[in-house]
Image (cartoon, rainbow, N blue to C red; front, side, top):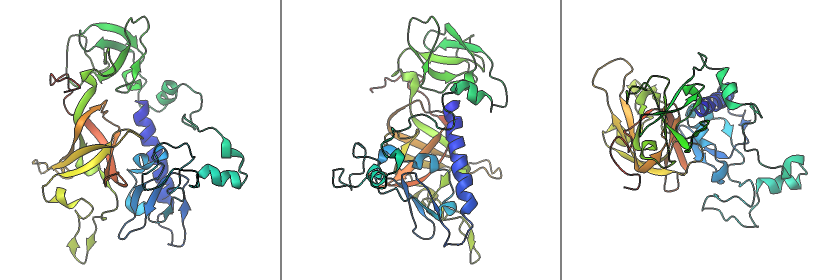
Length: 336
């Protein structure tokens, strides 16, 4: 799906640039104009959310190794972009006495000081998103059916299931109702119209099929930031020193999380479900259980975890392998 590809591409580009300088001497630094902070606290830097939460980029950086952030400075992390910012950290007063990025740019006579914010994806421009993404897929998208999740009826045709993301509007030609993507085929046959290229749709943006309250991440694929490096020190293995101690000790961890860029942080409980099959590299999975129903938890996208009452510290992120059972499958109402 496009949003999955965008998250992975952005994270990959950030990582390549940062990794390219991570081995340089300590007197060499790279400056990044994103609004987050890297607190250089031994043994590894910490990734902190920017003051202007409406511009915070920690979600995309949650997959970057902490070691790679050692020589990185984010000089805008303590600044709001403009006085109109509505999500500035409560530790700072968003008033006229607070200097913003635009204030500094105007004083320096930088031509873009008053330029309108870019809301799109700069490296794609005005090209069709679906056509752009199709160039990078291993196989050409194949047409298939839109199927109503409630009735099992075919309500339209699409150009390829991989071009759709859970939760987005499904533009179905001739449909009398407004539909939203709530599932893909192949994860379990619902009816005779289900195959691997089926896109299931529902007729409400708050339909129970779109909601779940837990998700799963392969443990080995989750990137922890700022806790440790997992190396052997003085003959003793510190393989788990980069993992929060409560998880290592078999306890749960209360944190905040988001599954989309700039999504409001939601309280959650994180547990480590260890594997019993003894396969090399299989360490089980993390279960993230939210305090409330979350809309459109999508496999392949990122879940980022945060600590602190206001989510100041980003602890890392990992690729979602799947959500728990939907509220539709559990027979629950979204407001329950």
